[in-house]
Structures are given as structure tokens and as C-alpha cells.
Image 1: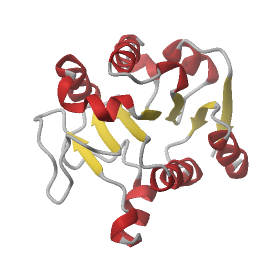
Image 2: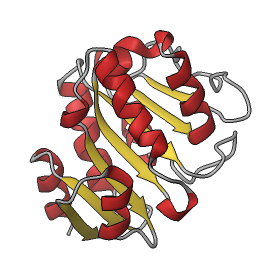
Image 3: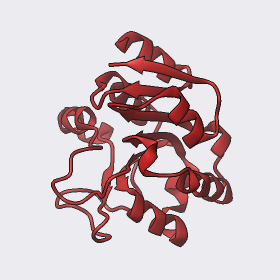
Image 4: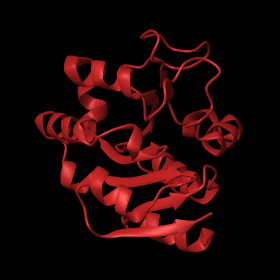
Length: 185
């Protein structure tokens, strides 16, 4: 299934992945973030994201990024739900390639809009970590509206729903899209 997941990612297909760890998805996102500086990615945790929380952390990207030459490193920022600060050693949230955040912080950023305008315009990948019964689709709907308002293309966003009980039906309800590929990792 990992080859299938990587192929789906490269083909731009939306996916539902049963399980937390699926390094092939993170590898495909990292590959594209390094190759195309004009794209960005968003990892959203549906649980409260505070320091010490690892439910949504794309650990593969973080590990591999440490070994990349300085010129190829992906700019990673964290948006903690408890406060709008970056974790030590993480680049400024104003210009990330990859933003890892919780729903509350994301909602605040979307309401502010201005500080992440360029990031949102470049947004291509949206990875939702957890199961959607914790959350309705209103935050993703708001995200689409703001992406379009910033000059991006919400119709080009590629969604990945990731979680131990994630299902195609959940992904369809959350994204409003019908063509979702289900993968077990």
C-alpha cells in the first residue's frame, strides 16, 4: 500500500489513510516541498495541539529535514493552540513551507488572514490528523475561502485524512469531495 499511497500523492488524489504513520505520504510531501519552493503544506491536528503533542507530527519530514543540505531544508513552523508562538528552533510562522497546527490556532490565523497570505496562496497539501467526528467541515470550508481570497486555488488542494478509524465516508463528509482513495498503512 505504501507504493500505492506515494503514487496517489504524486497523481494529486485525495486520500483516506487508516493509521497514524504513513511515511510514504510524508516522503511525497517532503519531496515536493524541496523540489517546488512555491508549494506549502498544512498538517492539522483535530485535538488540542500543545507542546509535547505528537498526534499530528509528520516525524518523517522532521527527521529527514535535519539531514538535508541547508539550501534544501523545508521551513517548518508550529502553531500551538495554547499560544501563538513558535517552538524553540523553528522558523518564523510568517513564511513556512510546512505548518503543523491545531484547529484553534488555525482558526485564529484564518481570521487574521494577513500574516500568512503568501503561505495560503501557495497551499497545496492539507493533511488532517484524527477522525472527523471530533470536528465538522466548517474549518476546511473557511480554509478554502481564505485560500481563494489570498490568490490561491482551493480546488487544487490535495487532502489526506489520517487516523486509526478514518474512513472514505468521513473524508467525503469533511472535504466535500466524492473521489477519495482509501489506503491502509
